[in-house]
Image (cartoon, rainbow, N blue to C red; front, side, top):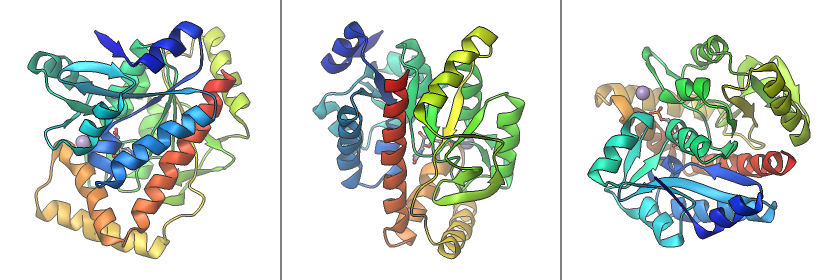
Length: 294
Ligand code: PSU
Ligand code: MN
């Protein structure tokens, strides 16, 4: 059912650390041509840190854990590549389509493949003004034991609502060297965090404690704030305009998040793109350290 790249297959048999990477960022989160460059740079960060990258996607209906360069190129540049959440996987296998996987779908596949650390940009969550629009990322994290490294939830979301849902689902949220919940493009979302960690080994320690406690049936969210954030005033102005544009264009369902991210990238003269790339790289670096520590 799963096809492993040669690199990932070798790492599995040697018991080497592996870091899962999602592909919706590449297909629907970052503009071309930077998306492919970033996907390759991120894989190099994992290798330089002593682990093996496993970018996850569907190619012609087959689940791939670890992509060869022509497959990565396809995810980045083929407009027929769809955004797949967990519910889509069995259908796309049948229709033999190519798809990029969200945090939810990537976590599911990573868990099937026995990978426990995963890096992304920002989690999905509860949408502003539409609290019934809740990303499938949240429920996936409630059901899958995986360490996910992110810069909080995307700031386009209802952060307070999302934090409440994470609490309801009993998903621990750790601040990496911070007491503040990061706000994706912003270092601080305005909300406090209860738990702070200082190192990858502390995170690995918590992961292991959960096994004995039988609380290891769900994710651990590690939040890693961006070092150089977007200008907050500009961020708020771009966000308000983006939310209004999404309403006016009646954007719904899985198109909402890509629409808002694209609005940011085209309205901030490259600032949001620079921050988004910094986030992905820095989260990948930390995820690599955690995977090696485990
Ligand atoms: N982080 C980014 N860019 C992205 C995403 C995360 O920096 O594009 C993607 C992830 O794949 C996440 C998805 O799962 O956005 C959330 O989509 P939705 O809100 O439709 O669940
Ligand atoms: Mn949604």
